[in-house]
Image (cartoon, rainbow, N blue to C red; front, side):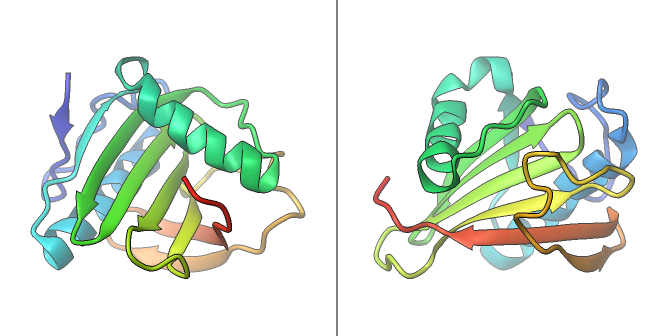
Length: 154
């Protein structure tokens, strides 16, 4: 069942099994606020078990571009298009959020982003491979993020 993320009243619905549940809920709400403010888009998530197609899409890009496979359990996904940008998100139990930004009309604006919830360790799959910048968020505390540019066609 899908769930519209409320960034005014942050909820942990769907993320309860995460050891950093509050921070992950804040991170998810932070993403929802961004898309509402910038694109007037309601950020909707679905349980990962109901969205295999989105998981397969994100996993394929991670595997083919950087040979990455995460061991953490995916909890939720989101997939939508705003203007000419296709977006896909996976929120993992350990507090990691992975997003794929795939601009339809500009191959130079395609990337995979990683955001780490406050209180989580850098996943072993990313250790030493990426530098993480810090960003403060009223909803999510300190978010650490990194990204890489997508070179292939998906």
